[in-house]
Image (cartoon, rainbow, N blue to C red; front, side, top):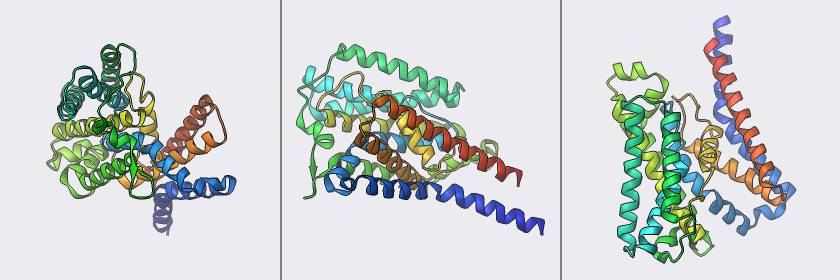
Length: 325
């Protein structure tokens, strides 16, 4: 009898953990629609998708890191530095768009590799290693830009972040986000690497015993996180039609918020890309709602912080109750 009650309790808590992001999204969407009917207008929805595209792309890479039980604080810096480097090479050095993109993305992949080596081989905690990388990249971005905006970037580079199409004004930035999301979903759901991310986040020792290569898996998570952040940088340059050393500042917190709000445990071992998508939409609706209400940016930071803390608290409470049986 007690076992049956315990089983039902576990199922109930698991259902809450799984479906609470969907309920939150539905409630927020309904509230926004009632409070401000213009929210449902095509222009408002297209703007919402455009605004969340960059940190949404960063959140996809961050999902892999958090699934493994780690975290990547350098995603916004990789996003910024890659965008600045591509813009600098093209606008200031006269390099072709293709060559600028190749060099920029190669540097981003190298940063991801370095993060992987520092965390997986040298065993520096993810928080410290990626915080150090973030600081270095922010300094390098200031160095190559001279603290000024870089303009005169080729249109072939800025198109992804600047243009809209499909006959309905659908932003190409959102297309880039959904394209990256599809790739991220495929890697996580359909490949051994994606399953290994969850395995080492859930129980590293058990994963090692079952044959998972812990070091290479962790390094791949770091590389993918940096690669997606570089794509975010390209989109951001297009959205701004320029590049500067402060662009994307704070996006690492937005990305982390999207991941945890979407149901991925901050402790690792669980999570899905669909959940991250829901988290991105939740944070986008919250941010859009605050913008429509005319709230100052510092109020938005306070509210966003409260949301993150509440979601993490709920996750911790549910996990504790599940472990207690």
